[in-house]
Length: 379
Ligand SMILES: NC(=O)c1ccc[n+]([C@@H]2O[C@H](COP(=O)([O-])OP(=O)(O)OC[C@H]3O[C@@H](n4cnc5c(N)ncnc54)[C@H](O)[C@@H]3O)[C@@H](O)[C@H]2O)c1
Ligand SMILES: O=C(O)[C@H](O)[C@H](O)COP(=O)(O)O
Image (cartoon, rainbow, N blue to C red; front, side, top):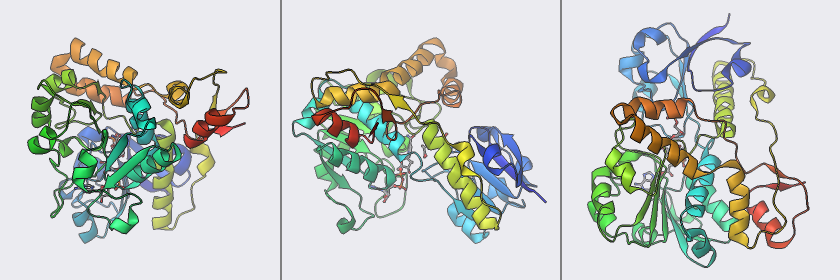
């Protein structure tokens, strides 16, 4: 008999992966009610669904999967107490977030040139995203240091204190959202931390909105000596603060990790975890994989920064996502929550640069080196 799976409508490829073993019911995650999952054996959600006793008490659900890296919407303690298996997808979208961060850097003035000339990136949170970013920066020969108090310092290739990271030219926040002591990340960037960030620095938050105190950031960005800020995530999503959006260099609708490659990776991870947990036939993974992407590059990029922009710009431009969000903020400010969710639900099929193939002229010298550092394969 097939198992009953309830899955968020925004997790692609599940029918291809699990159709042979499951009856799949698709639901809108933000409005999911207990009634809809009572008879289900398994539940796949995204970050917009709060999973706790209120949703699952009295249901038949034995497996919960979230197609996300963050798990702050899941009551993991309660799931454990109920012996409900749980799986999340940290790592699935790490490269997409890294490419978002590189785009933020590449599209903000001469920040990329300054990094190639010796400036430093500070990374907060050395999990899947933080480590992937560090590896990419190493490959590009860009300086970095990372702060993650929950990790053994020996596990971080270039450990730094929070003060070291906050003194870096670019500060990238990739910590999970937690209120756990002794190192809560909730409002880690409060008024005092933000006041210490200088006008020459770039602050990027692609983790969770509440890691930065948005009211304090708004105040900081209103000052004459304000730093430059890029926000993908916001407090009170989807009801973001439109005054804050006006003050950031780039703002996007929580889509840093939204590559189609990353989403399909997460679907495969969940399908494998579910079938593994229930002793079912493993999924046919080839059916939910994006096709090979081919890229070209003009003959003469002038320098390393031009190669990064030339390649990255073919798959991702942060300015486009920024423009989409600002248009919604201008056109329908009173419905920004609905518009924010719509932007996410209807997000384009963005591809990742890493894994793409460079066709045409065989690249030489620094062009070849930068392409390889970005994970691009040369035909
Ligand atoms: N914007 C997006 O689209 C997007 C995409 C992926 C992940 N995320 C968010 O980014 C977070 C990181 O993703 P990941 O895949 O690396 O997750 P992960 O679970 O692999 O890593 C999270 C890291 O944060 C660290 N951390 C916790 N508290 C900290 C603190 N106070 N200071 C510094 N570090 C702290 C943890 O020790 C851990 O190493 C996720 O939890 C998620 O909320 C957002
Ligand atoms: O935690 C994550 O993996 C990301 O924030 C992810 O992009 C969240 O996407 P959502 O579940 O909100 O669609």
